[in-house]
Structures are given as structure tokens and as C-alpha cells.
Length: 127
Image 1 (tube, rainbow, N blue to C red):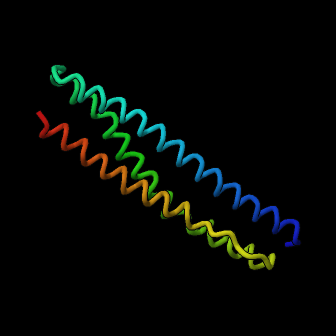
Image 2 (spheres, rainbow, N blue to C red):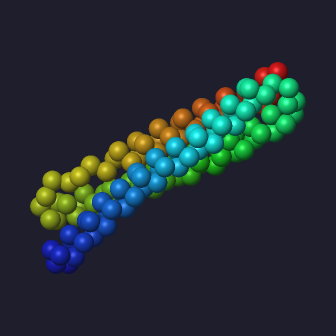
Image 3 (cartoon, rainbow, N blue to C red):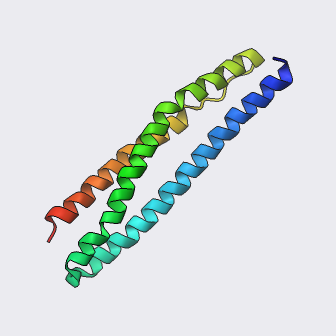
């Protein structure tokens, strides 16, 4: 592989990294916006009965689904990171650390599972 091809492949890895960080942050902002609105409705409208509890199922399901997706993504990011490091070595440049995405995904997974746990608590035990 010539140097131009190596640079192109390295650039693809970096662009992929930037895209995944961007989309992860946007998904989290979107999710917590929806969850905040639903929780605001739940706590402000105390006389809605079971409707308020059923409304909590959406953010709970989204929490679990996103936690599974982000956890899966964090586990599968390592090969791309390794490829980028190998390419940087072959290009004889200092590699750009791509582990931040993995940490972001694991952190988001933990936060989403904690949020799902609190929502389940609200559904089951909160009066």
C-alpha cells in the first residue's frame, strides 16, 4: 500500500470517529430532552392516574435500547482504533487517541441503565 492510500484510510478512521462522537452526543441530547419532557409531565400532572405511568414506558424502553446499542458499539470500536494506530505507525506519525469514543459509549451505557432503573422504580413504586 502506498503512502497516499494509507493517509486516505487513516482519514476515514478519523472521520468515522468524529461522526460517531457527534451522533452519540446528539442522540443523548435528543433522548434526555424527550425523557425530561415526559418526566416533567409525569410530576406536574399528578392526577393522570395510569396514563402518567404508561407515559414512562417510552423513555424506559428507549433507555434500555440505547444502552444495549451503545454497549455493543463500545465493545466493537476497539478494532477500528487498532487499525488507526497501525496506520499511524506505518505513516510514522503520532497517533490520535480514539479511546474517548469508547469511554463515551460506556459512560452513556451506564447513565442510560441508571435512568432506566429510576424510571422502573417510578412505574412500579411511586404513587
